Image (cartoon, rainbow, N blue to C red; front, side, top):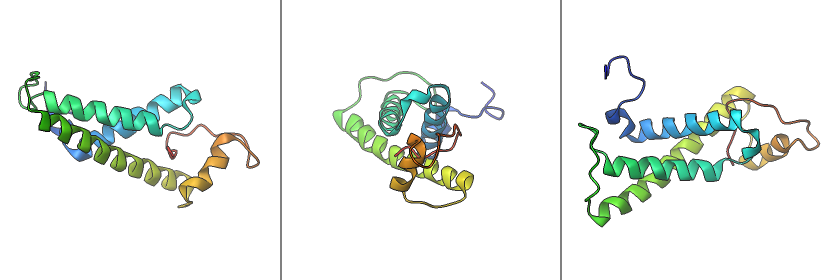
Length: 130
C-alpha cells in the first residue's frame, strides 16, 4: 500500500488520534445512513472497543494477526477503548459546536434531536452522541 496517499494506515490507526478519528467518522457516517440509530453512544463505545481489540492482535508493521498475547494486553486494549470513546465523543461534541454555533450542554441537545417542541430533527453529520 502506498502510505503517502493513504488516509489511514495500520501505524496511524494504532494511535489514539487515529482510532478516535476513525470511530467518530464511522459512527457519524452510520448515523447518516441509519437515522433510527438515535443516540449513538453505545455504538461509539462498541466500535472503540472493537478497534482497540483489533489493534491488540494486529502487528502495526506487518499487518499480521498475533492472537497469542498476554491477558494484560487485552485488558489494556479495553481500557484504551474507553479512552478512544472519550476522545471520539469529544470530537463529536466539538464538531457539533462548530456546526450549530453554540456550546450547549449535552442534555440541552436532546430535545432538538428528538424533534420535540423545538422542531423536527435535522440530519447533519456532526451531532452529539449523548
